[in-house]
Image 1 (cartoon, rainbow, N blue to C red):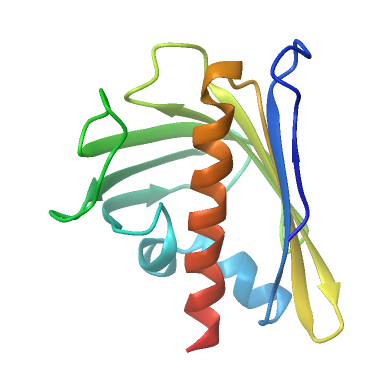
Image 2: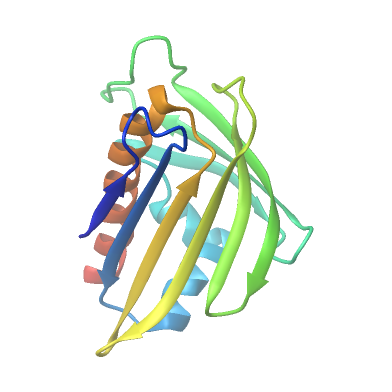
Length: 158
């Protein structure tokens, strides 16, 4: 999976990930936009989504609660339960989703996540661009996306 991480002192912190998911573009898009599927894969390994609301339209909101399982380790100073919320800024069904994201543990401004979906030889290539993150959290988001996308991949491998 190609990964790009902005250099720590570049002034613009971001994480970019590309992954091939062995499922149709519609199925992968549905995993991002249907709450009952989103709950099955979102968040790092050893975390579960206990609540989710997705109003997938420009100006619509998203909100979820991510809970660490009892045996999961969390970074020092982070809560075992976290709420994420945001607003969809662009929705092109089956092609692109863009939304802001504000995590309850982060007191800074909302980050911006753009997800693109492309056909890839019977599968779907997704690219995640996570921008407007602080340089001191890039490593957390980099690891978090690897883990989260691993769960998405596993959802369709079953």
